[in-house]
Length: 517
Image (tube, rainbow, N blue to C red):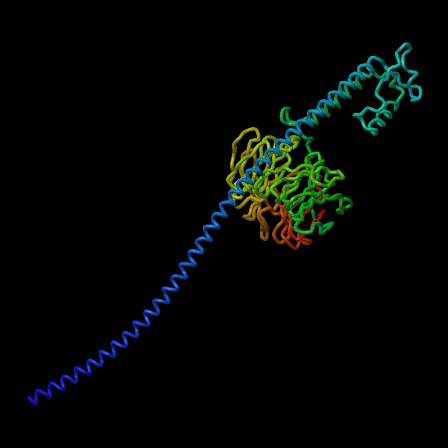
């Protein structure tokens, strides 16, 4: 039993030591449990804080979404009001133009009736004209009633024309018997011309401008005659007037400067103000009396040349994005604009409203107008042809690169396009096919609005490059004829060749205007 007691004691000691080990492990586990509980409590607090912040953010988001909904509703309402105001403005302008045309027509009819009545009375007598103007009254036949042969100062003839008529009347003694019936016909013709000129295009046959004289042979420019810092920022557009002595430049400073070419120099003529954005293109009507400009202010602006008032005469608004091109049509009182809002619009300038909107699939970068066709160049590398008498596109010619400009030859048989693939293309409109492709080492199109032009006789094609050089190609051979370098140190945006063929003007992104001879 003593032996068993010893064994049991030894076993009890091992069990006690094992118990102590387990108690230590238990204490360690309890301490770990306490730490985990504390960490759990901290995490629970963090979760509560995150949930509270999430709820606050959700509430703020709901408030912002509700506010955005109100703002969108207000925006839609304002857009509807703006559209309604625009429509009302267009209608008001149309009514005002119709009333003005009606008043002018009534005034012209009354004037014509009054003058016709006076001329009919005067036409019943024959006036004898001698060499001495003082004896004019003696030549009246005896017994004739003293009625005036012609009004002393007709309203429809200016003083200079009256003086010329008087000089012609007494130029020779051989004109002894002047019958006034011819005077009646001439005056009626003048009145009819004024009446036709004052009417709108809508209901009458199209009145065309007089054609611009064709240059027989253009002269290649060789050197820079004049260099000017013409604008406050980059110059985007340049064009000669029909008389080749008046030049217009337009730039990002929202101004159009008119220049006279005198003795190989550019002399400031006038500044046209009032544009709401950067000028992207300028165009003279074929008579040279009006200037039309496209602007980044979603509108085109119309000015009268020579008026003391430099503000715009009319604003053609209706586009929803930048207007990139604005051109006069060959028929009177009509124009065409192209825009980045993927539309081409036709305008009745007599009434200052849009007569037609053409929706296109791509941005329009430039437009030109023929007799009965509108040609537009687009960002999707296509040139589209539209019949101005029909609703649809009649032809599409694909080209490589985005089209930056179009130039129509004077005979309307060839079209010059410039594109961002650094080439110029001549399209023969008789067969609707690309006839020539011009390129050169170093020539690169500097922007999406780089303009290239034909020479007036269509012998050459001219364009400016990104490095400030001018490149001239021979249209018949397709070879590079000449490259001009010097004054320009930035990309050339546009070029113009005067109708007489003697001068070239180029403008660049560094505000320079260069006259070449």
